[in-house]
Amino acid sequence: MEMGDSQNGNGKGKGKTDTYQQWTMDDSNLLLGLLAEAMKNGLRDANGSLSKLNVENFILPRLNSKTRFPKIYSNYLSRMKWFKNQYNKINELMRNNSGFGWDPIGKKVTASDEVWEEYLKSHPTHKKLRTECRVDYNDLQLVVGVGTATGNDSMALGVDDTHASILENEENTISGMEKFPYDATINAFMVP
Image (cartoon, rainbow, N blue to C red; front, top):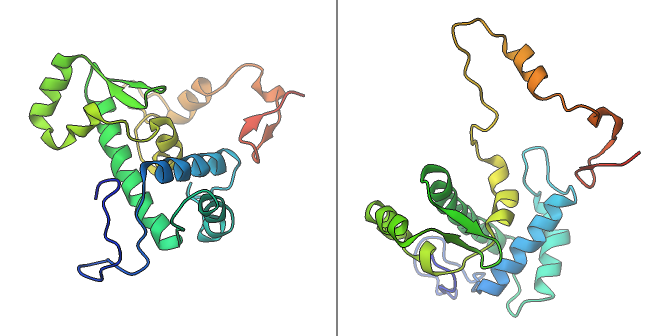
């Protein structure tokens, strides 16, 4: 379902209920901003997401105070699916194809015309990624990308019998960082 599509609770079809509220782009960006702020402030649980309690007590009241159509938890879940879909499209594009970048000001994917034309030959359903601003990819990464396996921390061991534990300890040691205490509530190191 695209942004702004309305089901308006007609009761027809799978999953359509009287609790559906139309999402505008402004509503979606507001929700994403609130979710990113909550993640930065440490409200996520062990699996990297927000609990229903946190969403209902902290996110939805703030969202509903600024939107025309109040949202409930099921509306939030629906929008999270949409966020994940947007993240997956942009992430696939950025990770698996060269020549693409992200413009954080314009909030859109950038590339030369030639790169876009070649990509859209094999991904015609992604045409809107080229022309329409959606949501902030950096916020999407923070909110829905936390549970996505990227392979960034993976390593391959060759036949030289290198031990993973030794290699990991050597690579992850940052000189002097042990002097800075970590504050999990703000997800940052503190200056002593």
